[in-house]
Length: 401
Ligand code: SAH
Image (tube, rainbow, N blue to C red; front, side, top):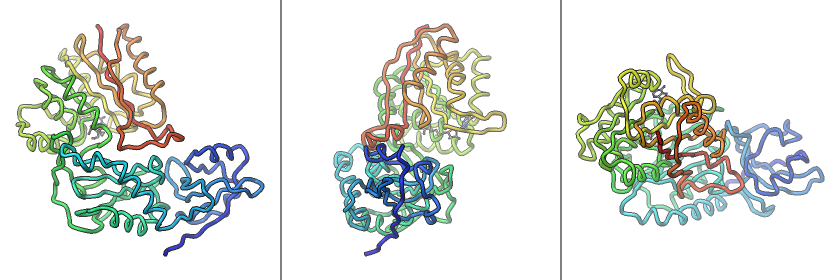
């Protein structure tokens, strides 16, 4: 059995209790003898100043930190059996998803929520997609892969490497790992709706699985008879669900040229003629100006910006600019229309996000009512000791003026 190199590290006293209480993210600031650490993927035994065991983890550099705790048990070895056990438990937790005939795409392993920070595994109708968030976690690849193969019936396995500090995708020649190669695209189902998924076509595969419950709510409760504007639309997943839920017309706006064919494809594979919908390649901020000038009004507006984006004219950062974005959206939402405000930024919590909404409406002298809100769905398991891991925040807001 492969053994991993271990080193003992002393934790500064101010941080000891936090780790003892189960906080999983290892920070650089908490370590006294940093110079001992050289290679990512090394097992770190965290000790207090008296040399007493606190926790063990591994060294992996991510924008979020310096490594992740793997166990609070001194006697637990970090080896093949350890990884196999964690993966097996995670798979069992998703039994309902595996048994569903309606949904064939979901997350089977969600980083620290399933006990191993820095790794996620998604399932797409028989194919598994591993995402490695640091060089450190990638050192355990052989054991993790073996565990996955042992405990699943897979058609094929793919991987994405997001190693650098900003978590950017490393452009590989090939993301295929083993098994059968997948069709390009494969068609998966989410609540009986088809999605085209490309497992080997850059950083993103075509859908963000964490928005499943939001898409369902839009389709079931908010779309019927409504006009919809979907901003930062990517492959138009929200538009598709709105259309299937009875929206009279959807307008999808995204800066990326690929969004037009990709959105068209998602409509087509669900028997909706893309020509009946508007798919616009443009900077959302320009589109807002245009819509305001033309006095366009929509009954349902989705805002789902990336946490940070740079276009030719604008640099957008969610924490600085969300209020502005909301104000633009409010002005082109009809009376009693609904805005779906979403963010995946881990830099602020739900309370702060609600604060942005209050501020935006106040500045426009308008009233609103919150209809419902969402955080991560249940396959995106969250570690209760790591609240920032529950990064998704989505609020359905009814405009009352
Ligand atoms: N809402 C999408 C996911 C959004 S991903 C979904 O549910 O699938 C973020 C998208 O924002 C990317 O497709 C990116 O091209 C787009 N984007 C970033 N900055 C933009 C801008 N200024 N105007 C329009 N689109 C932008």
